[in-house]
Image (cartoon, rainbow, N blue to C red; front, side, top):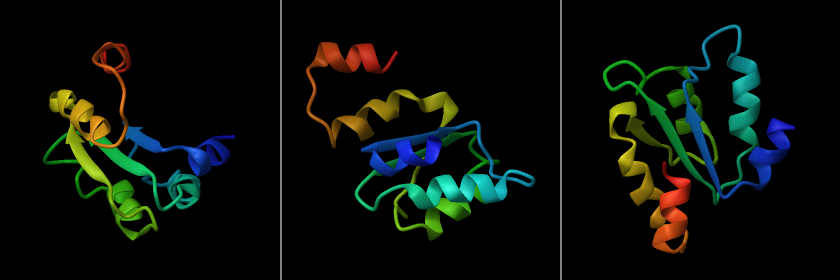
Length: 97
């Protein structure tokens, strides 16, 4: 089900996922299911997660445009999403709690 959802999603956000063994193959399947036009983002801890196995999978995928966001700066996520999707301010406030 996760692969099917990733394949049709306009935005895929990975949070708290490293793709380390034994989960590497499963996460690679999710990453490879993301269509080329989707916005992808990895949320993690700066200094630790930017170069984890998930980051490598995202960089090598057809989506290949992953944005890394430090978990302490999640407000930046709103800006990344707003650049791609037109919603009212009220709608954004509900999405980005």
